[in-house]
Image (cartoon, rainbow, N blue to C red; front, side, top):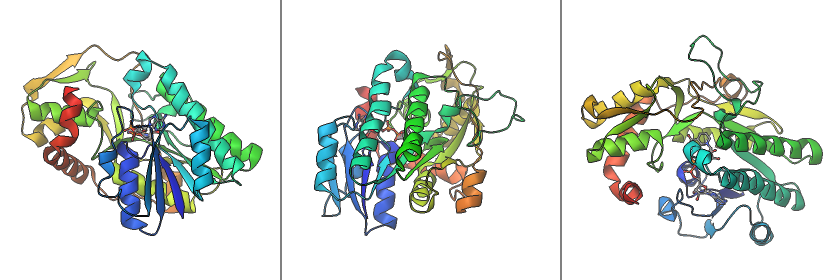
Amino acid sequence: MTLLVTGGAGFIGSNFIHYLRKHRPEDRVVCLDALTYAGNERNLVPLTDGSLFRFVKGNIGDEALVEAIFSEEKIDAVVNFAAETHVDRSIMSPEIFVKTNVWGTAVLLEACRRHGGVRFHQISTDEVYGMLSLDPNEASFTEDSPLKPTSPYAASKASADLLVLSYQKTFGLPVTVSRCSNNYGPFQHPEKLIPLMLTRAMTGGVLPIYGKGDNVRDWIYVEDHCRAVDLILRKGKIGEIYNVGARCEIKNLDLVRMLVSAVGEGEDRIVFVKDRLGHDLRYAIDPTKLEKELGFYPVISPKEGLERTVSWYRENRSFWEPLTTA
Ligand SMILES: NC(=O)c1ccc[n+]([C@@H]2O[C@H](COP(=O)([O-])OP(=O)(O)OC[C@H]3O[C@@H](n4cnc5c(N)ncnc54)[C@H](O)[C@@H]3O)[C@@H](O)[C@H]2O)c1
C-alpha cells in the first residue's frame, strides 16, 4: 500500500510515519509537507532513507503539485494531517487557516476523485464541537453532537470535515473522518501547552496560564492517536466519523502543576495571564463508537505518557531550543 501522508513533518504526522515504519514496514509513504514554522524534515530522520519513503516539500493547496504526485505515484490512500493548528495564530491571522485547512483539503479530495476514488482519511479535532460547560455532568461530545466551532481554527476544521463527508455522499469517495482530543508527546512544537510549560520549566522561565487555569482539556498520548488512525484507515466504515479519546480530562492548572513537579521545579514560576479571546471552557470526547465498533482502547496511561514526554523533551533539546529562541 502507498500512503500519501500530508503534514507528516509536523507533530502528529511525524509520529504517525514513525508508527507506520514500525508496524507497517511494507507500506510505502509519500510525505507532502510545506515545512511551515511547525514542520521539520528532521523529525522524520532516520526514516527518510530507502525506497519506501519519499519526501515532497510543498503545499497541499498547490493543485499542480498534488496532481503531479498522484500521477507519479500509485497512491492507495491519503491521510490528511496538514493544517494550520494553533488557535492563537488563528485569532491573529484567520485567512491562512481557510487556505490550508479548507482549500488544501478540497485540492486533495479532487485529486482523489480524479484518480479513481482514492481512499481518504481526514484528521480532525474535538474543537469542531465547540465547548462544554465546566459542569463534569454535562455529557461528552459524541459523533452526533452539533458542530459549534468557536475559533477560526475550529471553524476551518469543521468546514473541511463537511467537505470531506460531502465527497462521500456526492461522489462516492471512500472517506472517513476522525476527531481527536488534545495530543501530547514527542515532536510537539513548544508553542503548545505541554511543551511550552516543559521547555519553560527546563530553562527557568515563567509558566503563563490563561485566566485562572480552570479550563479543562481531554488528553491522549500521540502514539495511541496514531494507532487509532491506522485502525480507522484499514477497518473503519466508509462515510463514518470516529471520535478518538482516552477519557482523560485534566484542568489546565492541575496539568501544569503535574508538569512542574515532573521537572522538579516549584509552582512559584506559574503566572496567570489575560485569558485568550473566546477561550473554550471544556472539551471532553466520548470515544464509545470507536471502542465498540473497532475495539480501540488507548494503552498508554497518562502517567506513562507524561513520563515519556518529559524524558523526550529533556533528551531532545536540539529539537526545541531553536524554536523557543526564534
Ligand atoms: N495537536 C493536537 O492536539 C490535535 C488534536 C486533534 C486534531 N489535531 C489535528 O491533527 C493534525 C496535525 O496536527 P499537529 O498538532 O501535528 O500540527 P502541527 O502544527 O504540528 O503540524 C502541521 C504540519 O502541517 C504542515 N503544513 C501546514 N500547512 C501546510 C500546507 N498548506 N501544505 C502542506 N503542509 C502543511 C506543517 O509544515 C506541519 O508539518 C491537524 O489537522 C490538527 O487539526 C491536532
